[in-house]
Image (cartoon, rainbow, N blue to C red):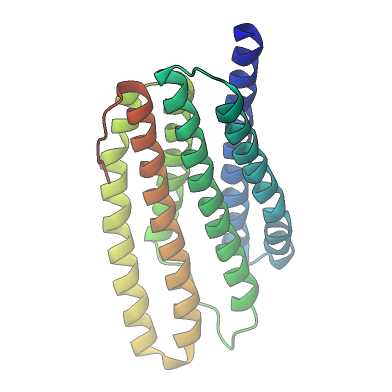
Length: 218
């Protein structure tokens, strides 16, 4: 019975990592569509968001089923499964942010004037993708140290976001015709900043899973 249960645990872990890969890819594609104003790519990101949601629901359902049938359950297994549900939820939200960026790309191309993304956006995008990848790698390796390494990246993203917002607001003030375009770009900045927060949330869950201690790094 335990051997079968261990296989189910492994399957659950693999599904979560697969979901993480899907979310990383969606965010990368959304950001690429912003870089090139590719509305076809952006539309595809939005269309495929449903696939991320399906995996999320499947992970939740399977985890709840395993919690119900496996009795008694080890404390380590209980932490693992509750953390899986939590991480899946964080990934689903990052997928939503990727979809939000894609929608903004499609909307922005219909504006009277496009706005060039601020310089800070490229560094933000790179950092956020790295943070998501690192948080999932910390889950795979069950490494609390790797999870804690996200602190400096999260702080850098917050700083870049503030700088980007200031630049965008100033551009809108200087050229009112770009006001709506600036709003679109501010939403992209917000989506990236929140994605970074979600990545640190994942890291906090990993720390709890490994150490059984609650630690706030966000």
